Amino acid sequence: DLIKKADISLYEAKKGGKNRVEYYGGDGEDTASRRLDMEKNMRDATANSCEEFEVYYQPVIDISGEKERCSGVEALVRWNSGKMGMVGPGEFIPLAELGLINPIGDFVLRKACEKCKYWNDMGHPEYRINVNLSVVQLLQNDIVERIRTVLEETKMRPENLTLEVTESLAINDIGRMKKVLSKIKELGALIALDDFGTGYSSLSHIRELPIDIIKIDRCFVIDLGKDDYAETFVRMVAELADTIGVRMCVEGVEYDEQLQILKDMKKVQYIQGYYYD
Ligand code: C2E
Ligand code: CA
Ligand code: CA
Image: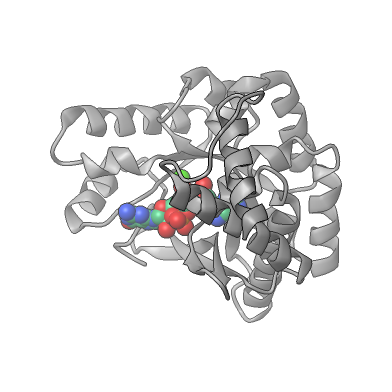
């Protein structure tokens, strides 16, 4: 117990810029302590062949045809921790990025590919799967090999796999990103630019990076029907994407009205959101 408390102080001291003294018992003790617990539990969970991690699937709906059709899914990881209960990725992925993202990311990719292969074999050969890749994973020297291995071992068709990357990472080192993404595409997989419109969005990236799909962030959908800016933004990006042959997906559709507006634009191919699942 004493060492754990000393650790909490140590963590606070490091967070505050190192080379300083921190006393145990101050504010933020609960969050710091939860974080330490989480780190330890996550280490145990990954050492235990990631059994506590679960992959959930949100349908991706193709709205470009006469009738809406489920074209595939996005894999979203959850951690069903024996000690902490259900933990969402928004909470544990940032912590995992400090060290454990590789085993967790590999696990999700493998589970997702196995599932997709299963669906493909069971009468839906065109079903696709999207898997999120963290910047930390993309920066691993062996990321392409890791993906290749999973594809080979699960015998999944590479063209049914889409890897989602975020823009904020693309901006850091665009040259390197281009190279890695091109290598991933050589495997046959597709690339989606996630959360477009947030952070350091730059329209030039749509052109510069070898991407196949742009995913418009949920924050624009919230304002659809209420705010002209959001609608114009979506419409404009859709036009641009269409011009250069990139497909577009809009995330976070919850209401009928939002779906109608997007359908009326005629240029949005895919949507995701609680409206469907
Ligand atoms: P994301 O990739 O943008 O995923 C979409 C998030 O929005 C998911 O939250 C999803 O449950 C939620 N969502 C979907 N439709 C709706 C909607 O209609 N309304 C609202 N309010 N929310 C909706 P989730 O699963 O908590 O994931 C959060 C983030 O964690 C993801 O954002 C992604 O960046 C990251 N993440 C999830 N799984 C993985 C993974 O396997 N690997 C990595 N590296 N990151 C992951
Ligand atoms: Ca995503
Ligand atoms: Ca997103």
